[in-house]
Figure: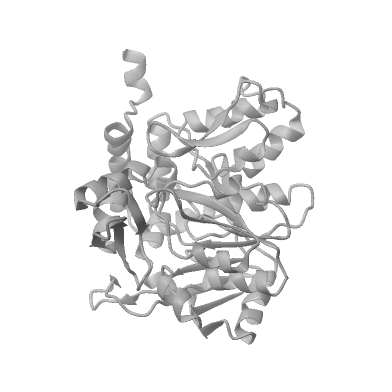
Length: 417
Protein backbone atom coordinates (compact mmCIF):
# COMPACT_ATOMS: atom_id res chain seq x y z
CA UNK A 1 0.00 0.00 0.00
CA UNK A 2 1.21 3.56 -0.67
CA UNK A 3 2.54 5.40 2.37
CA UNK A 4 2.54 9.08 3.27
CA UNK A 5 5.84 9.75 1.51
CA UNK A 6 4.47 8.55 -1.86
CA UNK A 7 2.47 11.68 -2.55
CA UNK A 8 3.06 12.19 -6.27
CA UNK A 9 2.70 9.99 -9.32
CA UNK A 10 6.49 10.07 -9.73
CA UNK A 11 7.03 8.79 -6.19
CA UNK A 12 4.45 6.06 -6.81
CA UNK A 13 6.32 5.00 -9.97
CA UNK A 14 9.68 4.99 -8.23
CA UNK A 15 8.32 3.00 -5.29
CA UNK A 16 6.95 0.29 -7.60
CA UNK A 17 10.39 -0.01 -9.20
CA UNK A 18 12.24 0.04 -5.87
CA UNK A 19 10.10 -2.76 -4.41
CA UNK A 20 10.58 -5.01 -7.47
CA UNK A 21 6.90 -4.83 -8.44
CA UNK A 22 7.55 -3.32 -11.89
CA UNK A 23 6.82 -5.56 -14.88
CA UNK A 24 8.20 -3.07 -17.41
CA UNK A 25 4.82 -2.82 -19.16
CA UNK A 26 5.48 0.78 -20.23
CA UNK A 27 2.29 2.43 -19.00
CA UNK A 28 4.33 5.01 -17.08
CA UNK A 29 5.55 6.37 -20.42
CA UNK A 30 2.02 7.60 -21.11
CA UNK A 31 2.94 10.37 -18.67
CA UNK A 32 4.95 13.32 -19.92
CA UNK A 33 8.61 13.18 -18.92
CA UNK A 34 8.67 9.40 -18.34
CA UNK A 35 10.53 7.07 -20.70
CA UNK A 36 11.35 3.37 -20.68
CA UNK A 37 14.91 2.03 -20.78
CA UNK A 38 16.87 -1.10 -19.94
CA UNK A 39 18.24 -0.92 -16.40
CA UNK A 40 21.47 -2.46 -15.11
CA UNK A 41 19.65 -5.74 -14.53
CA UNK A 42 18.58 -5.98 -18.16
CA UNK A 43 14.88 -5.23 -17.66
CA UNK A 44 12.75 -2.37 -19.00
CA UNK A 45 12.09 0.23 -16.31
CA UNK A 46 10.61 3.75 -16.24
CA UNK A 47 12.95 6.71 -16.05
CA UNK A 48 11.33 9.84 -14.62
CA UNK A 49 12.90 13.09 -15.76
CA UNK A 50 13.71 15.72 -13.15
CA UNK A 51 11.22 18.13 -14.75
CA UNK A 52 8.49 15.54 -15.39
CA UNK A 53 5.00 16.81 -14.47
CA UNK A 54 4.54 13.56 -12.54
CA UNK A 55 6.75 15.06 -9.84
CA UNK A 56 3.98 17.53 -9.00
CA UNK A 57 0.91 15.40 -9.82
CA UNK A 58 -0.51 14.74 -6.38
CA UNK A 59 -4.29 15.12 -6.60
CA UNK A 60 -6.22 12.13 -5.22
CA UNK A 61 -7.73 11.46 -8.65
CA UNK A 62 -4.30 11.38 -10.32
CA UNK A 63 -2.89 9.02 -7.71
CA UNK A 64 -5.97 6.79 -7.90
CA UNK A 65 -5.64 6.58 -11.70
CA UNK A 66 -2.07 5.37 -11.40
CA UNK A 67 -2.83 2.95 -8.56
CA UNK A 68 -5.82 1.57 -10.45
CA UNK A 69 -3.90 1.01 -13.69
CA UNK A 70 -0.40 -0.12 -12.68
CA UNK A 71 -0.05 -3.94 -12.59
CA UNK A 72 2.69 -3.49 -10.02
CA UNK A 73 0.14 -2.13 -7.54
CA UNK A 74 -2.75 -4.58 -7.88
CA UNK A 75 -4.09 -7.38 -10.08
CA UNK A 76 -7.76 -8.33 -9.99
CA UNK A 77 -9.51 -11.33 -11.53
CA UNK A 78 -11.78 -10.30 -14.39
CA UNK A 79 -15.46 -11.14 -14.80
CA UNK A 80 -16.67 -9.63 -18.08
CA UNK A 81 -20.40 -9.49 -18.64
CA UNK A 82 -21.73 -12.74 -20.08
CA UNK A 83 -18.52 -14.72 -19.48
CA UNK A 84 -18.03 -17.99 -17.64
CA UNK A 85 -14.97 -18.40 -15.44
CA UNK A 86 -12.44 -21.22 -15.16
CA UNK A 87 -10.06 -21.28 -12.15
CA UNK A 88 -6.95 -21.38 -14.38
CA UNK A 89 -8.03 -20.22 -17.85
CA UNK A 90 -9.99 -17.26 -16.47
CA UNK A 91 -13.10 -15.68 -18.06
CA UNK A 92 -14.32 -16.93 -21.43
CA UNK A 93 -17.23 -16.48 -23.78
CA UNK A 94 -15.78 -19.07 -26.18
CA UNK A 95 -12.71 -21.31 -26.46
CA UNK A 96 -11.40 -22.96 -29.60
CA UNK A 97 -8.42 -24.76 -31.09
CA UNK A 98 -7.50 -22.45 -33.96
CA UNK A 99 -5.02 -21.61 -36.67
CA UNK A 100 -4.59 -19.06 -39.41
CA UNK A 101 -5.64 -20.11 -42.91
CA UNK A 102 -2.66 -18.17 -44.27
CA UNK A 103 0.15 -20.79 -44.46
CA UNK A 104 2.85 -18.13 -44.06
CA UNK A 105 1.28 -16.62 -40.94
CA UNK A 106 0.77 -20.08 -39.46
CA UNK A 107 4.36 -21.10 -40.17
CA UNK A 108 5.94 -17.88 -38.91
CA UNK A 109 3.74 -17.54 -35.84
CA UNK A 110 4.63 -18.96 -32.45
CA UNK A 111 1.77 -21.45 -32.74
CA UNK A 112 -1.18 -21.02 -35.10
CA UNK A 113 -0.58 -17.41 -36.16
CA UNK A 114 -4.06 -16.38 -35.00
CA UNK A 115 -3.34 -13.10 -33.19
CA UNK A 116 -1.42 -11.63 -36.12
CA UNK A 117 -4.12 -12.80 -38.52
CA UNK A 118 -6.94 -11.31 -36.42
CA UNK A 119 -5.06 -8.02 -36.04
CA UNK A 120 -4.52 -7.78 -39.78
CA UNK A 121 -8.17 -8.72 -40.43
CA UNK A 122 -9.34 -5.85 -38.22
CA UNK A 123 -7.15 -3.36 -40.11
CA UNK A 124 -7.96 -4.81 -43.55
CA UNK A 125 -11.68 -4.45 -42.89
CA UNK A 126 -11.34 -0.90 -41.54
CA UNK A 127 -12.71 -1.80 -38.12
CA UNK A 128 -9.48 -0.62 -36.44
CA UNK A 129 -6.87 1.78 -37.82
CA UNK A 130 -3.67 0.98 -35.90
CA UNK A 131 -1.93 -2.07 -34.48
CA UNK A 132 0.49 -1.91 -31.54
CA UNK A 133 2.77 -4.91 -31.09
CA UNK A 134 6.41 -6.00 -30.97
CA UNK A 135 8.99 -7.42 -33.33
CA UNK A 136 12.74 -7.76 -33.76
CA UNK A 137 14.59 -4.46 -33.99
CA UNK A 138 15.53 -3.89 -37.63
CA UNK A 139 18.99 -2.57 -36.72
CA UNK A 140 19.77 -5.34 -34.20
CA UNK A 141 17.46 -8.39 -34.30
CA UNK A 142 18.67 -9.50 -30.86
CA UNK A 143 16.71 -6.55 -29.44
CA UNK A 144 12.93 -6.23 -29.36
CA UNK A 145 11.10 -3.04 -30.27
CA UNK A 146 7.57 -1.81 -29.78
CA UNK A 147 5.84 -1.08 -33.09
CA UNK A 148 2.69 0.83 -33.97
CA UNK A 149 1.52 0.72 -37.56
CA UNK A 150 -1.53 1.32 -39.69
CA UNK A 151 -0.07 -0.63 -42.62
CA UNK A 152 -1.88 -3.96 -42.85
CA UNK A 153 1.07 -5.56 -44.66
CA UNK A 154 3.44 -4.47 -41.90
CA UNK A 155 1.23 -6.14 -39.28
CA UNK A 156 2.48 -9.46 -40.66
CA UNK A 157 5.96 -8.62 -39.36
CA UNK A 158 4.66 -8.87 -35.78
CA UNK A 159 4.43 -12.68 -35.88
CA UNK A 160 6.36 -14.76 -33.36
CA UNK A 161 7.04 -14.49 -29.63
CA UNK A 162 9.79 -12.24 -28.29
CA UNK A 163 11.21 -13.55 -25.01
CA UNK A 164 12.90 -10.30 -24.08
CA UNK A 165 12.08 -6.94 -22.48
CA UNK A 166 9.75 -4.62 -24.41
CA UNK A 167 7.16 -2.09 -23.25
CA UNK A 168 4.18 -2.10 -25.59
CA UNK A 169 1.97 -0.03 -23.28
CA UNK A 170 4.34 2.90 -23.87
CA UNK A 171 3.03 3.32 -27.44
CA UNK A 172 1.35 6.71 -28.00
CA UNK A 173 -1.57 4.92 -29.73
CA UNK A 174 -1.93 2.20 -27.07
CA UNK A 175 -4.93 3.72 -25.29
CA UNK A 176 -6.97 4.71 -28.36
CA UNK A 177 -10.24 2.92 -29.11
CA UNK A 178 -9.22 2.72 -32.80
CA UNK A 179 -6.17 0.57 -31.94
CA UNK A 180 -5.59 -3.18 -31.89
CA UNK A 181 -3.28 -3.62 -28.91
CA UNK A 182 -1.21 -6.83 -28.74
CA UNK A 183 0.68 -7.28 -25.50
CA UNK A 184 1.62 -9.32 -22.47
CA UNK A 185 -1.04 -9.83 -19.76
CA UNK A 186 0.40 -7.05 -17.60
CA UNK A 187 0.32 -4.68 -20.59
CA UNK A 188 -3.26 -5.70 -21.34
CA UNK A 189 -4.23 -4.84 -17.77
CA UNK A 190 -2.49 -1.48 -17.85
CA UNK A 191 -4.06 -0.48 -21.16
CA UNK A 192 -7.58 -1.60 -20.27
CA UNK A 193 -7.59 0.03 -16.84
CA UNK A 194 -6.18 3.39 -17.92
CA UNK A 195 -8.16 3.66 -21.17
CA UNK A 196 -11.47 2.99 -19.39
CA UNK A 197 -10.80 4.99 -16.20
CA UNK A 198 -13.07 7.86 -17.27
CA UNK A 199 -15.65 5.72 -19.05
CA UNK A 200 -13.71 5.59 -22.30
CA UNK A 201 -13.80 2.82 -24.90
CA UNK A 202 -10.67 0.62 -24.75
CA UNK A 203 -8.75 -0.58 -27.79
CA UNK A 204 -9.31 -4.11 -29.02
CA UNK A 205 -6.91 -5.97 -26.72
CA UNK A 206 -5.19 -9.18 -27.79
CA UNK A 207 -2.95 -11.07 -25.37
CA UNK A 208 -1.33 -14.47 -24.85
CA UNK A 209 -0.28 -16.89 -22.15
CA UNK A 210 2.95 -15.59 -20.66
CA UNK A 211 5.58 -17.24 -18.46
CA UNK A 212 7.43 -14.00 -17.72
CA UNK A 213 10.03 -11.60 -19.09
CA UNK A 214 13.70 -12.69 -19.11
CA UNK A 215 16.64 -10.32 -18.97
CA UNK A 216 18.02 -8.94 -22.22
CA UNK A 217 21.47 -10.29 -21.42
CA UNK A 218 19.98 -13.81 -21.33
CA UNK A 219 19.48 -13.49 -25.09
CA UNK A 220 22.96 -12.02 -25.49
CA UNK A 221 24.47 -14.86 -23.47
CA UNK A 222 22.64 -17.51 -25.49
CA UNK A 223 23.92 -16.00 -28.73
CA UNK A 224 27.47 -16.04 -27.37
CA UNK A 225 27.12 -19.63 -26.18
CA UNK A 226 25.91 -20.74 -29.62
CA UNK A 227 28.71 -18.85 -31.35
CA UNK A 228 26.39 -16.62 -33.37
CA UNK A 229 28.18 -14.46 -35.94
CA UNK A 230 27.57 -10.73 -35.43
CA UNK A 231 26.17 -8.51 -36.75
CA UNK A 232 22.91 -10.41 -37.10
CA UNK A 233 20.70 -10.48 -40.15
CA UNK A 234 17.79 -12.11 -38.30
CA UNK A 235 16.91 -13.73 -34.98
CA UNK A 236 13.74 -15.34 -33.76
CA UNK A 237 12.88 -17.08 -30.52
CA UNK A 238 10.14 -19.31 -31.93
CA UNK A 239 8.05 -19.73 -35.04
CA UNK A 240 9.10 -20.92 -38.48
CA UNK A 241 7.44 -24.15 -37.36
CA UNK A 242 5.79 -25.13 -34.07
CA UNK A 243 7.12 -24.68 -31.53
CA UNK A 244 10.10 -23.62 -33.62
CA UNK A 245 13.71 -23.16 -32.55
CA UNK A 246 15.73 -20.21 -31.32
CA UNK A 247 17.59 -19.29 -34.50
CA UNK A 248 20.06 -16.53 -35.33
CA UNK A 249 21.61 -15.81 -38.73
CA UNK A 250 24.55 -13.50 -39.23
CA UNK A 251 24.90 -11.13 -42.14
CA UNK A 252 27.51 -13.57 -43.43
CA UNK A 253 24.77 -16.18 -43.83
CA UNK A 254 25.94 -18.45 -40.99
CA UNK A 255 23.13 -19.71 -38.71
CA UNK A 256 22.97 -21.17 -35.22
CA UNK A 257 19.95 -22.80 -33.64
CA UNK A 258 18.77 -24.51 -30.46
CA UNK A 259 15.44 -26.07 -29.51
CA UNK A 260 12.67 -24.14 -27.78
CA UNK A 261 12.99 -26.43 -24.74
CA UNK A 262 16.69 -25.69 -24.39
CA UNK A 263 16.54 -21.99 -25.17
CA UNK A 264 13.68 -21.24 -22.77
CA UNK A 265 14.40 -23.89 -20.15
CA UNK A 266 18.16 -23.42 -19.80
CA UNK A 267 18.95 -19.86 -20.87
CA UNK A 268 15.94 -17.55 -20.81
CA UNK A 269 13.38 -18.83 -18.29
CA UNK A 270 15.70 -18.83 -15.26
CA UNK A 271 16.26 -15.07 -15.63
CA UNK A 272 12.59 -14.05 -15.46
CA UNK A 273 12.11 -10.93 -13.34
CA UNK A 274 10.72 -11.23 -9.80
CA UNK A 275 7.43 -9.46 -10.58
CA UNK A 276 6.62 -12.18 -13.11
CA UNK A 277 7.10 -14.86 -10.46
CA UNK A 278 4.36 -13.15 -8.45
CA UNK A 279 1.99 -12.88 -11.41
CA UNK A 280 -1.62 -13.87 -10.75
CA UNK A 281 -2.56 -13.32 -14.38
CA UNK A 282 -0.28 -15.12 -16.80
CA UNK A 283 -3.26 -15.91 -19.04
CA UNK A 284 -4.29 -12.43 -20.22
CA UNK A 285 -7.59 -11.99 -18.36
CA UNK A 286 -7.82 -8.29 -19.29
CA UNK A 287 -7.87 -8.96 -23.02
CA UNK A 288 -10.75 -9.33 -25.46
CA UNK A 289 -9.01 -12.34 -27.03
CA UNK A 290 -6.15 -14.45 -25.68
CA UNK A 291 -4.06 -17.03 -27.55
CA UNK A 292 -2.03 -19.89 -26.13
CA UNK A 293 -0.13 -22.91 -27.34
CA UNK A 294 -2.45 -25.89 -27.55
CA UNK A 295 0.15 -28.58 -27.14
CA UNK A 296 -0.48 -32.25 -27.64
CA UNK A 297 0.41 -34.32 -24.58
CA UNK A 298 3.11 -36.95 -24.17
CA UNK A 299 2.14 -40.32 -22.63
CA UNK A 300 3.43 -38.91 -19.32
CA UNK A 301 1.00 -36.01 -19.55
CA UNK A 302 3.52 -33.26 -20.35
CA UNK A 303 3.36 -30.90 -23.36
CA UNK A 304 4.85 -32.43 -26.50
CA UNK A 305 7.30 -30.03 -28.14
CA UNK A 306 7.82 -32.13 -31.28
CA UNK A 307 7.67 -30.02 -34.45
CA UNK A 308 4.31 -29.94 -36.25
CA UNK A 309 1.83 -27.52 -37.82
CA UNK A 310 0.98 -24.81 -35.31
CA UNK A 311 -2.26 -24.86 -33.33
CA UNK A 312 -3.37 -22.10 -30.96
CA UNK A 313 -5.92 -22.17 -28.24
CA UNK A 314 -8.06 -19.09 -28.78
CA UNK A 315 -10.06 -17.64 -25.88
CA UNK A 316 -12.69 -14.96 -26.39
CA UNK A 317 -13.06 -13.26 -23.02
CA UNK A 318 -15.55 -10.50 -23.81
CA UNK A 319 -18.61 -10.27 -26.02
CA UNK A 320 -16.62 -8.06 -28.36
CA UNK A 321 -13.88 -10.68 -28.51
CA UNK A 322 -16.41 -13.40 -29.33
CA UNK A 323 -17.89 -11.32 -32.15
CA UNK A 324 -14.43 -10.67 -33.63
CA UNK A 325 -13.59 -14.37 -33.64
CA UNK A 326 -16.88 -15.22 -35.33
CA UNK A 327 -16.32 -12.51 -37.95
CA UNK A 328 -12.79 -13.78 -38.64
CA UNK A 329 -14.11 -17.33 -39.04
CA UNK A 330 -16.88 -16.16 -41.37
CA UNK A 331 -14.30 -14.28 -43.45
CA UNK A 332 -12.24 -17.45 -43.75
CA UNK A 333 -9.04 -16.02 -42.24
CA UNK A 334 -8.94 -18.45 -39.30
CA UNK A 335 -10.28 -21.94 -38.69
CA UNK A 336 -11.56 -23.04 -35.27
CA UNK A 337 -12.88 -26.07 -33.43
CA UNK A 338 -14.58 -25.90 -30.00
CA UNK A 339 -12.30 -26.64 -27.05
CA UNK A 340 -13.07 -27.38 -23.41
CA UNK A 341 -11.26 -25.19 -20.84
CA UNK A 342 -10.10 -28.21 -18.83
CA UNK A 343 -8.45 -29.62 -21.96
CA UNK A 344 -6.46 -26.41 -22.38
CA UNK A 345 -5.49 -26.30 -18.70
CA UNK A 346 -4.27 -29.90 -18.97
CA UNK A 347 -1.58 -28.93 -21.51
CA UNK A 348 -0.61 -25.72 -19.71
CA UNK A 349 0.82 -27.15 -16.45
CA UNK A 350 2.95 -24.08 -15.77
CA UNK A 351 -0.09 -21.81 -15.57
CA UNK A 352 -1.80 -24.33 -13.26
CA UNK A 353 1.09 -24.59 -10.81
CA UNK A 354 1.78 -20.86 -11.02
CA UNK A 355 -1.63 -20.08 -9.55
CA UNK A 356 -1.60 -23.02 -7.17
CA UNK A 357 1.64 -21.94 -5.51
CA UNK A 358 1.25 -18.18 -5.83
CA UNK A 359 0.16 -17.72 -2.16
CA UNK A 360 3.50 -19.20 -1.06
CA UNK A 361 5.47 -16.84 -3.30
CA UNK A 362 3.48 -13.81 -2.14
CA UNK A 363 4.07 -14.81 1.50
CA UNK A 364 7.78 -15.33 0.90
CA UNK A 365 8.03 -11.90 -0.69
CA UNK A 366 6.39 -10.29 2.34
CA UNK A 367 8.63 -12.26 4.72
CA UNK A 368 11.67 -10.93 2.90
CA UNK A 369 10.36 -7.36 3.12
CA UNK A 370 9.57 -7.07 -0.61
CA UNK A 371 6.06 -5.67 -1.07
CA UNK A 372 4.10 -7.73 -3.63
CA UNK A 373 1.18 -6.45 -5.71
CA UNK A 374 -2.28 -6.83 -4.17
CA UNK A 375 -4.05 -9.83 -5.66
CA UNK A 376 -7.85 -10.07 -5.61
CA UNK A 377 -10.59 -12.39 -6.77
CA UNK A 378 -8.61 -15.40 -8.00
CA UNK A 379 -9.75 -17.86 -5.28
CA UNK A 380 -6.14 -18.89 -4.85
CA UNK A 381 -6.77 -20.60 -1.53
CA UNK A 382 -8.95 -23.27 -3.13
CA UNK A 383 -6.09 -24.39 -5.37
CA UNK A 384 -3.35 -23.94 -2.76
CA UNK A 385 -4.81 -26.36 -0.18
CA UNK A 386 -4.37 -29.26 -2.60
CA UNK A 387 -0.64 -29.47 -1.90
CA UNK A 388 0.49 -28.10 1.50
CA UNK A 389 3.93 -29.69 1.14
CA UNK A 390 4.42 -28.05 -2.24
CA UNK A 391 3.39 -24.69 -0.78
CA UNK A 392 6.03 -24.99 1.92
CA UNK A 393 8.69 -25.90 -0.64
CA UNK A 394 7.70 -22.95 -2.82
CA UNK A 395 7.81 -20.62 0.20
CA UNK A 396 11.33 -21.67 1.15
CA UNK A 397 12.48 -21.75 -2.47
CA UNK A 398 11.17 -18.25 -3.12
CA UNK A 399 12.99 -16.80 -0.14
CA UNK A 400 16.18 -18.50 -1.29
CA UNK A 401 15.72 -17.15 -4.82
CA UNK A 402 15.27 -13.61 -3.51
CA UNK A 403 18.55 -13.87 -1.64
CA UNK A 404 20.60 -15.63 -4.33
CA UNK A 405 19.22 -14.12 -7.54
CA UNK A 406 18.16 -10.67 -6.40
CA UNK A 407 20.39 -9.94 -3.40
CA UNK A 408 17.50 -9.37 -0.99
CA UNK A 409 18.15 -9.81 2.73
CA UNK A 410 15.25 -10.30 5.18
CA UNK A 411 14.39 -7.28 7.36
CA UNK A 412 15.77 -8.77 10.58
CA UNK A 413 19.20 -9.22 9.01
CA UNK A 414 19.11 -5.70 7.63
CA UNK A 415 18.36 -4.32 11.11
CA UNK A 416 21.12 -6.44 12.67
CA UNK A 417 23.57 -5.14 10.06
